[in-house]
Length: 323
Image (cartoon, rainbow, N blue to C red):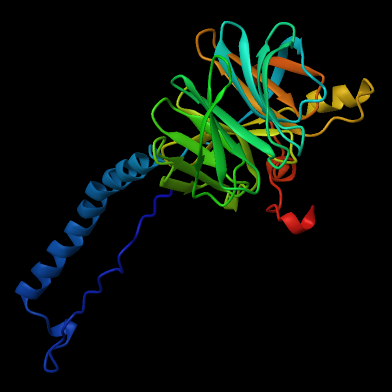
């Protein structure tokens, strides 16, 4: 939120001199008036100076706090299907995860045991669909697809398909809910609000950081009133205010992918997938074709070099022609 203080132009006082009377010939009344004015000027400054300080201090109260940066600590590691091209992830309770996977002829919706990574239930999608974001609202799972404004609805217990829907976003990337409405991303810098009954756009906000649009918003997760978003082709998660779209913080997770690469997992793709266990305050993350899923804890970072976030977390907008 940007506040601006508009200062009006200073008022200029004009002294009207009589052509027939000079200051040296001024009357006693004239001199009295000027003495009184010179006495009042210091008094005016003394009275107004504290007011100026008060106003300045009041404005400082409304300055937006700096964006917090976080590193992570890995609390637990869990097995994850290394063939799962993770596009959507969420916690379903009782140490169960729901996951949407992508790639043509390999896309699916699945129910996964957290501790073992075992796929309990799987619904394989038609080969013509590329699975994307996934969320749970009530007893129904909602899933987006890539390059088609089509989504699917599933029963949360047996993953049977209950229906399909169309949406008005440019594409389908990420999906989340606050328990009332749906939030969606389409790979741009826009965070959408969708009616869960009609799937029409009821609101949208452009996400920006330090004057830059945050392009390529991908998988979404609603966490304690915030929207957390993977930024495609980065190891960053953006913490976004659902109220005004401001970036509240950045989570840096580059150590996860680098450790997997160092361990010989050279075929892994990008970080993608956030799941929040609201009952136990646990956060889980993984990536596309990653062999592990991580429970993480955040730690504030005090010293971040200028331009580091722009370099690590911001990318040019995605265009299909570039793939």
